[in-house]
Amino acid sequence: MSEYINALMICLQPVNLLLIVAMVSLGIVFGAIPGLSATLGIALLLPVTFGLSTETSFVLLLAIWIGGVSGTFISAVLIGIPGSSSAIATCFDGFPMTKNGEAGKALGIGMTASFIGTVGSVALATVLSPVIADFALHLGPWEYFSLCFCAITLVASLSKGNIFKGIMAAGIGLLMGCIGMDPINGATRFTFGNVYLTAGVSTVAQMLGMFAMCQIIRDSAKGEASMPDADVGKMKGLGVGFKDIIENIRTILFAFVSGVWIGFLPGMGSGISNMVAYGYAKSISKDPESFGKGNPAGVWASEVANNASLGGALIPMMALGIPGDGITAMLIAGLTIHGLQAGPLFMTEQPDLAMLIFACVMVSAIITYIIQIVTKRWFPYILKVPYHYLYTVILVICYIGGYGISNTMFNIYVMLALCFLAIFMSMAALPTSPLVLAFILSSKLERYFRQGISYAHGSYAEFFTRPLSAALLVISVFCVVWPLY
Amino acid sequence: MNMRRDTKTGIAGLIGCAFFLLASQSIKQPAKLLEPGPRLFPYVAVILIAMSSVALIIKGVKERKIEEKPYFPKGGILKISKSYLMLVAYAIAMTWLGFLITTPFATVAFIYDLKGNSRVKLVPSVIIAVLVTAGLYAMFVWGFQVKLPAGILFE
Image 1 (cartoon, one colour):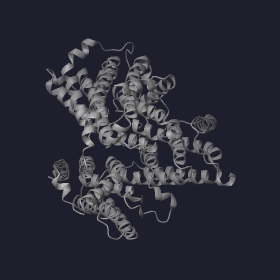
Image 2 (image 1 turned 90 degrees about the horizontal axis):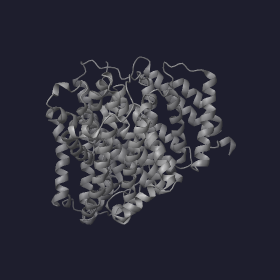
Image 3 (image 1 turned 135 degrees about the vertical axis):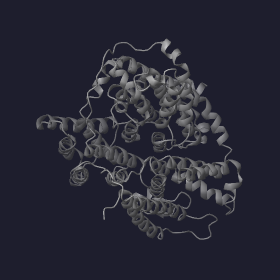
Image 4 (image 1 turned 135 degrees about the horizontal axis):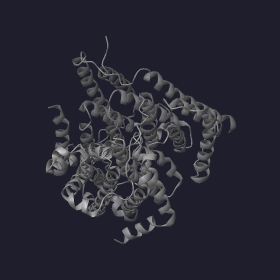
């Protein structure tokens, strides 16, 4: 508890508080504009953190994450285009509310629901993560390997369209992770005599090339960089009251629980939880016909669930060092930049820093809510930002970031090569999430696998005879086989 | 014959596999190991990609008669190729001339490239380009202590 209070104090220091306000505001803008996202925001900020202290870096990254995730409902409500997949269900009733002249109320619900989802789930993550981390300390390399393997297969099996595309993307991620020195013997792999490649492919270069650069030039080529005007009515006041929360309490509670659980599972996250919660809200409604025509319960369900997934995803990231989605994978990359390794040892050996992460998320969520209340009337203007100027600045920042990784031009060329790969993958409809997860987990996966066999004197049996490891492997096999039938 | 995207992806995947399988042979495998050694994971990755590639080729062949919607609208491939070449040109120019000289030109070029159907005027674009370059330089070099490329010609 004292660590948490100390962490809160760090977040409330004037400099950090100012940074949180600035980054949350930037995050809201990134979340609100379709095409930009919290993921992109974190990717752009990663290089900035090279020269900053660990605490300040995490304040920056977490604040933009929270603002970005929360801001996705704005365009969903105002123009019917979700800021990201996590706000798809918000469009179903949020946009009709705007068309019915209730934009102010819909935005108020979005803000309040995001706040409830984030604050509740982060409080839960703060309590549960140390408990799970304590348990995880008793696990061996066999269980860790199976856990990483399970996470990758879950993500690959949930890939849109075809499981083979997910497996292929995961394979590419594993192969990329193999570049450089192997984690046990230090043998060089796929470096082709290049000394810069000995350290492997930089995660930051990967994120900037595959997410930021690729997305910008692809959207421009597809002609997806223009938006309709927002039709807004009365925007004064919060738009919702305590009575609204009480009226929708069942929906909110279910959305919260499902959001946390789905966020906890690797590969699922807010993109799925908002749809599940929306479906439930419709099923328990006395007037299901009104869904899709501007029923506030639809917005409550979607926004509570997608923000609750955020806290759910924090649990495996903090307690086990396993990223549940692309964003938490980047946050783990942020930890790695500062020489830290997420997981049970991090929770027990550096509880002050672990608690700082939880405290910062909590403070960011509160500040996000306050900023959204104050700036609500200006939300429509966010959507009028001229894309060509914004994207140009982002592209230049990518180059600065790429150079900053090692102060050489090499990583800029790596970034460009990965941008090319990402364009090819997007044309081939190969999902990027399995690639990112496999890339981030590849060295852990390999280390645990080979250590497991070494510790068992060359035997593979331990993977199947230890109960937790065996159960996780069965789940993994099921995940791969199930989509084929 | 008009190939589906899945088939093309599968073929590209198999070519990539062949290349990395060949490259894996040069990984030094220490003797007398209790565990499988550094070649195992590259092999696993190659097998995963190869399996998926074959599955995608089969899927593409099976569905060859189904009409496929083009990924990019008309002229999209040309547009993305142009944008990508612009990014490469900026990187090469930055290598030789550094950040400060190349960025204003690159910024104007990017603004025009990404403008879509919006109207853009040259003078405001140039002013924005100079301001962006100066602002980012000040922010990163003085604010965040991040070095920026000076250019081979000026080092």
